[in-house]
Amino acid sequence: MEMILDFISNTGFAMADYRHVIMILVGCLFIYLGIARHYEPLLLIPIGFGILMGNVPVFKGLGLGIYEKGSVLNYLYFGVRQGIYPPLIFLGIGAMTDFSYMLAQPKLMLLGAAAQLGIFTTFLCALMLGFAPNEAASIGIIGGADGPTAIFLSAKLAPELVGPIAIAAYSYMALVPVIQPPIMKLLTTREERLIRMKDPRPVSKRERIVFPVVGFLLCCFLAPAALPLLGMLFFGNLLKECMVADRLAHTARTAIIDAVTILLGITVGASTQADVFLTKKSIGIFFLGAASFMIATAGGILFAKLMNLVSKEKINPLLGAAGVSAVPDSARVVQLIGNREDPNNYLLMHAMAPNIAGVIGSAVAAGVLWSFMM
Image 1 (cartoon, helix red, strand yellow):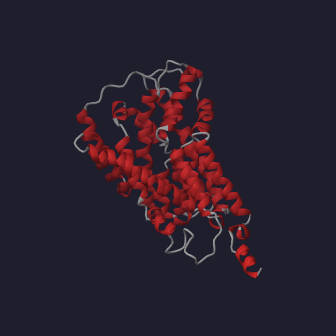
Image 2: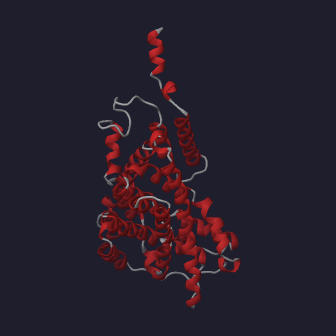
Image 3: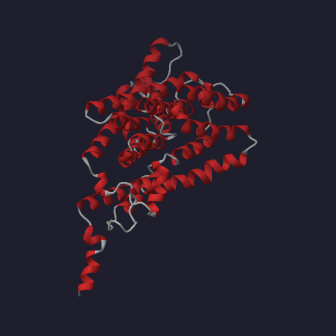
């Protein structure tokens, strides 16, 4: 009987408290949203299951928990802690991305820059609320709606906050179709939503090959701290466009990015142990992250309206919402909202320009913030 009682006391059922139950429900919600609602399933399903793995109560010292040195999860988490996984994700994104939409309409890059308003506004708000400067910088980057960038910067500046920041960033990325439409409709008139864009000019092969080299040099000379992210992004794009390294480009956009996404999702999810994750700071991060994302969306839209005041060729302000770097979801939302107003208005290829610019802009913003905090 004593052995049976000892066994029962060592089970997760006996060691669990309400915090573990809350986090397990959160993990199940992520899995549900990924499977049933198709919200970023490649991200939410691994993260959701990782949350389950991280919240099975275990004895300390057995080498099982993600924060215990020598455990398998701790070794896998090394890629998050040291910022290894995010650049590899950027490599795959670069190998999948077509920059020609942005090159054909360079003025739309300004919308991607304007959307970074959410990052710096939230950074200042977090400072006012008492967060340390390094923590405030890590929280602000959530407004870029770029999970890998948020993980990279928080791993460098506030490693203890990687879990809540990553969960907040990926949550808002997944909820782009829910969060952005009300803001888009609130800040635009029907007349503005009906604006049609001219077809973009053709972009030559030479331009597409030269751009990754020139873009990398310009961005990284401006913000050298962004080199790990932007270097891999532009390198992946060069592999895609040069046409003589197809095998490498294919591997980058399939095997590498898929494997890293699994490891990143599982370990980020597992890092949300209830005793570490459920804190006042985590709750504050979620509220500030939501504000950052909404300000970024509004910033892009309002800047598009401002451009229309001084430009002869009008821009559909909905495109400003694509300035957040949730590729390609925010561009799809722009197409969806525009298509509801006018079924013959095709905005997707135009929205990809600020969307891609937003990816570059959020990485540059992360580099700038990291430089200030060093």
